[in-house]
Amino acid sequence: SQQGEEDPQALSIQEGENATMNCSYKTSINNLQWYRQNSGRGLVHLILIRSNEREKHSGRLRVTLDTSKKSSSLLITASRAADTASYFCATDLSLLAGGTSYGKLTFGQGTILTVHP
Amino acid sequence: GAGVSQSPSNKVTEKGKDVELRCDPISGHTALYWYRQSLGQGLEFLIYFQGNSAPDKSGLPSDRFSAERTGGSVSTLTIQRTQQEDSAVYLCASSLFRELGTQYFGPGTRLLVL
Image 1 (tube, one colour):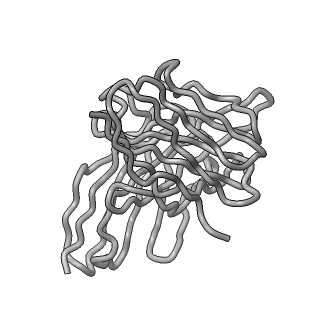
Image 2 (tube, one colour):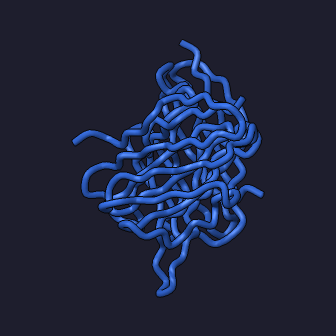
Image 3 (cartoon, each protein chain N blue to C red):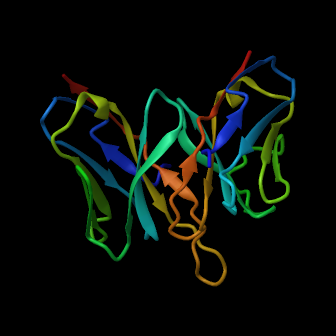
């Protein structure tokens, strides 16, 4: 089964509104990342939050991480039509002997965001 | 310089044929990953390379799937005796650092097995 589960599966909003997407996971993680995908092709990295961080900002993006609830949220403020895409959370729970991670990502099913002009 | 590139962009093949998918990572990136995205399974990890070795190939679905990386750069994913369920988009990503590293994805190869 998928490590990450996202909700909502689809979100439709008007330009200028905020969009919030949530991700829940099941096991301890090294870090959690959010990616964006347009038209079912390459993914673009948006933001990475480490397991010891609680909140991170990047431009109009704000990510929170609650390790006690095993959940994360991505907030896009003042959305634009160009933000229309699929958004995925991905957890890194890879572990090599010696205790280092190696970036193996487990993805959620994604949220399809549509921003209407 | 350029980002991760993959070829071909699209591949249509007949069931039972072999296919090779190529990934050119960003120059200097030592970590390379293959993922597969299909309607039924979402995005799945296939294999991880550090340099030319593959410490984790646990995501390869069957022994029909293999991958190699040469010169710490280009990687090839080979699928032998393709089946219809192999139809998917195959994505390659590379990263400068294996730990806490941003992964840069290529545009993917869309494979259709008839």
